[in-house]
Length: 498
Ligand SMILES: [Fe+2]
Image (cartoon, rainbow, N blue to C red; front, side):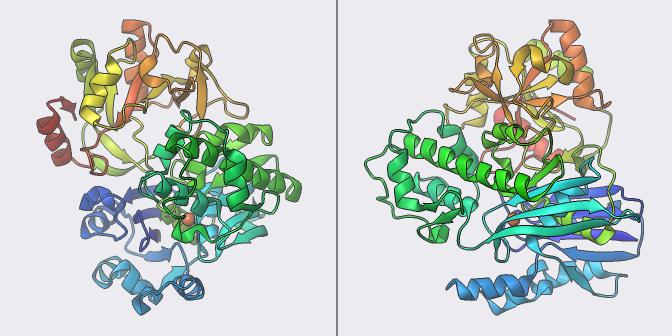
């Protein structure tokens, strides 16, 4: 049996496959095949790629949310949903579903949206039991949920819901509303607002709090922020300070949820999911409550395709890393990358299986020597993004404490889940943000290509880290296949090695 999990219809459609032994055969994002960023629809490209990784004709399909519940919420909130969104076959796409259903008898199992988030986190985690916290913009009705999760004597994952917050009170919708207020795209550019937070002041935080928050303790808001705030909201406050205040308010609300979870469940292990778990700045505070923390690399809705498949499989899956997407065949070109790094200081790599999640972790990356003053501008010339945004470091895990003060609860950050203070910002200005922190990726001794590269780079230079940013053409999703890599190389005149 193969369990196919699907998330689609809202944003970031994705598809995952697990086999009967708990092996993750494939997990990928539709956008990387269609080349439409945040594509909400599946496409034939991803369906065919996923099917090529299946090892059984016996297939069960699991969908990450309950369309009719979502429809009901949309009606109640005054939206005008299309009748077709009630039917999961229309949401997935009839033609694609037929292709997937060949052999599965047609049934599509649907699951609660927040439960799919919870399963994506818990069943990929190393824990036998956990407190699971899910915070996102909106599921069907839930916007925050706290669960107790454990495996029963037969190894079946069991979830008990302990607490929820319902629409329209939502930390995710609040953050997205503020993202839109400063002129960025909601449900896309929240990470830019997070980066802006380092530049503002918190002088006007009381004003913002008073205008928006009904109760920090109960996590309630004065208005429904689903439709955003007016364009003149806090018009006398600069955008950077709006970002600062948004981040600080969000952190306080998130930590109130975590503190509530700590009171409701006795487990020492925290599994944290939902799109808000991508806020790596807020995540630094989680260790004040939990010693053991697991945030899977794709905690947003795309990752819930894996969660839905996990709910079909029901047991712990064999998680090793996030390189489970499209495969560019061939061994990792370590020596060629090193040669380029030494001669040009910048090189692209597109090799092996693509990362499942929003971050490039070494297989679809633009890598650079992080040392010195001028490298940031050089990489920015290629990426053409806001100059205030730094790039991320990827470092041999055993050296992380020599270069970064990791926050409590995190002795590693294998999927860039958390920020850490850089101990030598003057030596590595390209990977340090305005507030002195970096979004660190640590690489263990896992036999991966990026591990071998870093080891050799360290022997040659004495530096155990590289600058790592995603390999993508501006406005497009991350490079997926060899053709994308070739287009990148031609467009930017930067060697991309496969
Ligand atoms: Fe979600």
